[in-house]
Image (cartoon, rainbow, N blue to C red; front, top):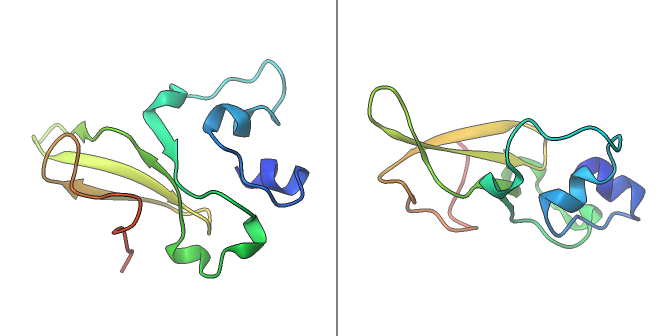
Length: 100
């Protein structure tokens, strides 16, 4: 996503397919693109706090071997993050995720 923005005057991609378009033509993502949704729109330079700005989130939670539900997120500081959630959809919207 950040590479796409760098090559497009700071404009963030509208979805992950657009984001992956800047990679080598034959390179494919290691996961189905529909698993994640882009949350951050607009210009990269408008991001005030990269450590708290959510870029993408997993659409559906994944059940872990111990029976809990987990969702993955990526923030603008390029650090991944995960959170246990109450069910397969989870209680969090685009806002409401805050790392401690």
